[in-house]
Length: 355
Image (cartoon, rainbow, N blue to C red; front, side):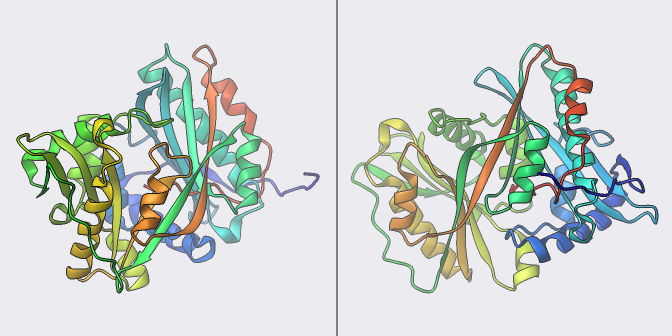
């Protein structure tokens, strides 16, 4: 692109502290009024991200501040662990819409990639790093910015949604299976079932016990009364499940209660029997009866289990398309060399990664 952008000469990048959470929350709210991603984050959500034992406050959350001390952008990185011979790191960030096209996005993108590579160096320097960002596919400026630091579109997800005022009748579980509600004794069994169910999914990173507690069963957004599992008769093994979350910030922003179907899975030997359809139908009726207005979920557009068809079959429809951008940093590459790739100015802001 033969376009010029003013350099971000008045911008200071510094690590974010817990005391910056109010300003960070306000920044994200201002970004969402323009970007309309459907993602809403409150102070409790950001505090949960910062208290994750797998991140380092002082390194992994960075804000961009102007000469008046106003927070006008940020990035954060989340080390996810080893998958497919790579150390995977998720990244996210954005820029205040009124301050875009001034080079801030380029500064943040360079710093984000550099810090992600350093995080790999600190944990698994023997492995190449796989850096991943997700954002709305319709955002061309975002794609240009990520391309400037070497990231390319790799896979696509769909955000799906359905109102709960006309939920279709739920199907019974197939013969030989029983449905149970979740209880806290199932925490690790559910994690193991999820890891097993998604083992054949491209780019899947297994969940560690720490990460699972932090963002799934120990999260303030988790709704255990709306989580359901299926087992084969005569066994307590979880062979299929539906996990549900609710984000308070979404209700505060929209006035509508949304049940987020965070995880759905069926173990390989129990697929193609209607377990996921039956569990989802049961969950949707439970959502409606509990007073929720709608349900949403995210699905890989190339999910190998045919999940997209299952979700459409129970009433979900596609709301938006998201792109996963990725790059690989060789184990021998220095973080400083990687970071230099993004120092040219770029348009727009960084994408905000759905949780």
